[in-house]
Image (cartoon, rainbow, N blue to C red; front, side, top):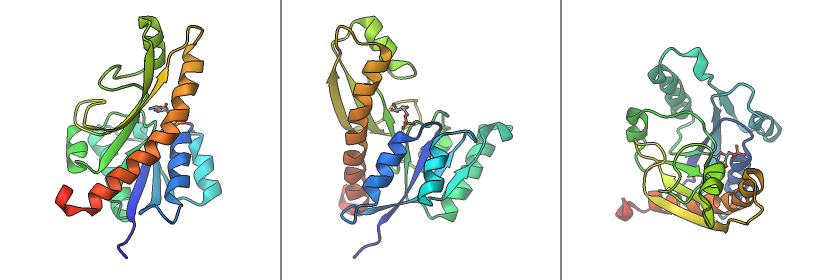
Length: 198
Ligand code: GRF
């Protein structure tokens, strides 16, 4: 049996996608193992989950560093210590430098609450409503140097309803995020384990 792929999750707040990934990776049928969480926010709610589940969580406050490179070097150390092979960004609200993203090429993925390439950036739900779009959703994609760019792995669509607010729409999309991310991680792990696909 090959060893499970060692996965880290980056988060900045509530961490509900991280929890979904943790539950998924805990299944014996899944060829990955959740070995490390990293947050850049000391007050992130998701830290409580890590403590309750005994998942190692590195709190690396970006404000403690003068440069992005310094912050990322600290992240890289934590990743190296746990011999991480795959990074999943889930509500991680820091831009990563091209250096860092390139080093992790095809081994760092992200979830974004829109049907990429539409609605990159923040406040996607409000912008979708303002445009009167009929459809919205979420995407899990390989990270590239450009923000919210990179090949899409899984996308899930939801209808936009006439009486939606950004909150109701966000909740509908979030339910799909919890389905999309586990599906995507299975695909990525399979690709990592198959050298012919690399
Ligand atoms: C999710 O909607 C994710 O797509 C976006 O930020 C939100 C994070 O939620 N990037 P959570 O921290 O996973 O609960």
